[in-house]
Structure formats: C-alpha cells, structure tokens
Amino acid sequence: MRNICMTVSYDGTEYNGFQSQPIGRTIQGEIEKAIHALTGEDVKIHGSGRTDAGVHARGQVFNFLTESQIPVGKWAIAVNSRLPDDIVIRGAEEVPLYFHARRSAKRKTYRYSIRMGRYPDVFNRRYEFHHYNPLQLDPMREALEYLIGEHDFTTFTSIHSTKKSHVRTIYEAKLVEADGVVHTYFTGNGFLYNMIRIIMGTLMRIGEGKMSAADMPSILAACDRTKAGPKAMAHGLTLWEVEYTSK
Amino acid sequence: MRNICMTVSYDGTEYNGFQSQPIGRTIQGEIEKAIHALTGEDVKIHGSGRTDAGVHARGQVFNFLTESQIPVGKWAIAVNSRLPDDIVIRGAEEVPLYFHARRSAKRKTYRYSIRMGRYPDVFNRRYEFHHYNPLQLDPMREALEYLIGEHDFTTFTSIHSTKKSHVRTIYEAKLVEADGVVHTYFTGNGFLYNMIRIIMGTLMRIGEGKMSAADMPSILAACDRTKAGPKAMAHGLTLWEVEYTSK
Image 1: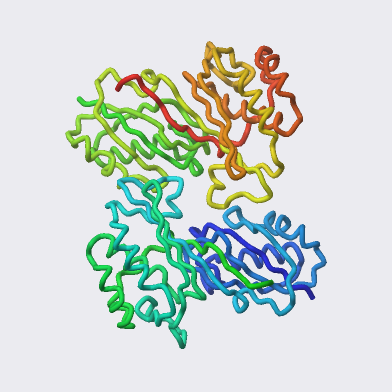
Image 2: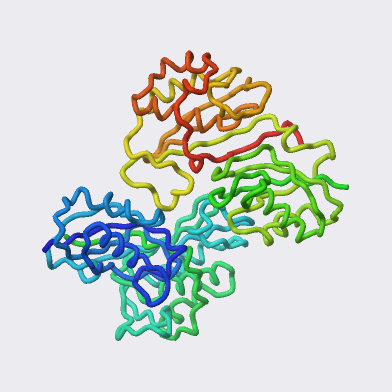
C-alpha cells in the first residue's frame, strides 16, 4: 500500500465545494472519479480541509492510499488527463503511511481578493469580488491587526459551526493593494466555517466607513456572530497554500 | 440622432465570435440585445473588427446610432446591468456622427499568450495556450522582426480570405516572457482573417526548433499558406487595444 500526496489548483466556480456532498459536483468527487478511471480503485481522498461552494484553490493538498504501482512522476499528468480543465493537479509525491493531509497540516494560507472600481475585470471576474466604491485601506489594516494571535473566533464563524472549540491562531494577516485590487492574506493553524468570509465582510464594512476599526477588539471579544459584518461572497476566496513540517 | 462609442472587454470562451452569425451566441448579439432592453431601439453596433470564436478582447471598440437621451456617463453601467458577466462595457463617449469604429481605426494591437510548463494555470486557462515543452524565445524574436513593416501577408492568412488585398503593415511586434508566460504583441493597421493565429503557429514551430527563423523571409515572400505553420488555438488571443487619431 502506498500513500500519495498531491497538490491541486481549481477554479471552484462550477462546484459545490471541495468535499463530496449528496447533491452537486464536487472537487473531491471529480478527483476520485479520475483516479478510478486511471487505476480501477475506489479511493477516498483526504483534503487538507473543505472549501465552500464557489471558493477556489491555488494549492489545496490531499492524500490517498493506493495499491497502484504508477511511478510518482507520472501521477499528476495521468490524473490531469482524466480531469475537467478547471481542476489541475500540480504535483504528486509518495509520503509515509502516517501522513494525513488534514491532520498533518501545520499552517494554511487563504487569500481574499477585491477589485475596487467602476468595472469588474472580465478576465478575473470569477476570482475577485467587485466593489464599486473605493475602500479605505488603512482602517482595514488596523482592524486586521487585532485578529492576529490566538483568539476565540465565535464572532466570525457561522452559527451552524459544529466545532467544540472556536479557538484558532492567526499567525499573519496582511492586506496589499496594486492597481485597484486588494488582496488580503490570512495564515493560521486552521480556520472555522465561513471565518474568512465573515472577517472580510466585516473589514469591508470598516473600509466603507460603516464600522470602526477601533471596535474590532470588542467585536471579537463578544463571541457573538451578530456583532460581525455580513459574510463576503465566496468567489473572492482562494485557498492559497497549505504547509507541513514534513511529509 | 447621437453616435455613441463604447469600449468593451469580453471573455470570448462561450461565444461564436464578435460578429452576429446565423448560429450561436455572439458578443454583438448580446450587446444589441442589452441596448434594446435599455432603450427599446433595434440598434446595429459597428465593431472595430471581428474576433473569431473563442478570441477575447480587453479593449474592443464599437459605435452605434441612437435617439436615446441617456447621459453619456450613465451608458456603461446601464448596459452592463443587462449583459452577462463575461462582457463588460468599460467606457462610453459621444462622438461625431462621421465616426465609425472600423473605418476610423488607425492601429490595432493584439496579444497572444502562451504558458510554458508541465501544468496550465487553472485561473488563466481560458486566456493562455498551454505549451508543455519550453520554447526557444530568441529564434521566435528573430522571426518576428522579419514581419515588421508593409508586406503581403497571404502566407499568413486563411485560404478562405475574401479580401482583395493582403497587404498590411505591422508597426510593432514584440515578445515578452515573465514567469513562464510568453506574451506576443502585434500592432498594425489591420490584420487578415486568422493572420495572428497562423503567425503564432509558425512562431511556435520555430520555438520548438522544427522550423528556422532564417526561413521567415522566404516563407513570407512565398505568398503561400502551405509554407506557414498551423493555426494556433483561438483562446490564447486577445484584442488588446484599438487606437484612433481622434474620435
């Protein structure tokens, strides 16, 4: 038995999220189907985490167990040839049997992208949230600072979260702007359901002058979803990178 | 009567080209429908030129006559709200009645994009031709130089061209590479049917070492389509800009 780990990019626009669901096409479903077409095996892949419907990935990671003897250098192209063109395997390696893409993950980075201006960029419309009015970025940066560190992020998760603990650590959070596009990067040990989208919805309220950056500490401390802003649209969000200490 | 000139970006993936056709959705058809929904008028728009099925535009230009009194600053957003999200009007202005987007055009620039490498970039897959093996760029640049100036481009046009003259002038042609993506820009007074795609198919043969840059002058002088390389895929091509001396 071998444990194969792959890195995959996908455009999530046409999918009902990463993880298999009773209804709709999923990234996991497409990949498992492609591996089945290649090896004849009914594998179950383990992603580093779910991504919501419409969310993208630049570097999602997953692993699966197989008895196939396909050489590691051939896996990516062989699977890609059986995948739709909005899912691209970008690398494959053989890892120890104890490796698990979710449980072994150390840090994850997400990016949320906003295009400010009168018109969306047609070529990036699937990956950028379009915000007609300019946002004040300095208050957004100030608010972001308060989120760094270990906190209970109950304010910024869905009321449907089933996790026992909402304590997570954000190691880095930065907002960069170029040519009217604002990219916000979050690196942490894990993120709760809808957490980045609710943070971004709140940051946009702050950037619009409708909420104050100085209120961020009390919003966070309230552990109350109703204190945060709305959930931002899914399509601006991309799972950027997943890091492991070793594979 | 007013003459309105607009600049439009579109992702051509889902369209049967710019110009109305008996079969299939076209950019022109969608825009005329949107203007009709807005004004009630059956306008005919005049593009600066056609783009083939699957070809994109960053800055296509068109004009149309209307009796509508909508202020010029409101046109773009009003039309956009009635267009699918893969077509975005980026500006509108009122121009003299004698202005015609095709006949008044002075220079056009196209860009052809190639991603070299093992994997396509999933986020740009609709706009970049994926070339697995690296291309030798210096011979491609050398071959490009021979095309600059006024020439009969019969070698590089479809045998189905209906134009009386195949003489066109290329003012500038340059190839730039960054992070494995090769963009080739062509600026000229006009381009024949399939001309840039056939030039690019020939350049790729040269970049693969299957044809020689030094043969470019005789290939061009032959005025014989069979001397050129194959027609490159449509999706790498974007109408970049159309220039006018005045509008």
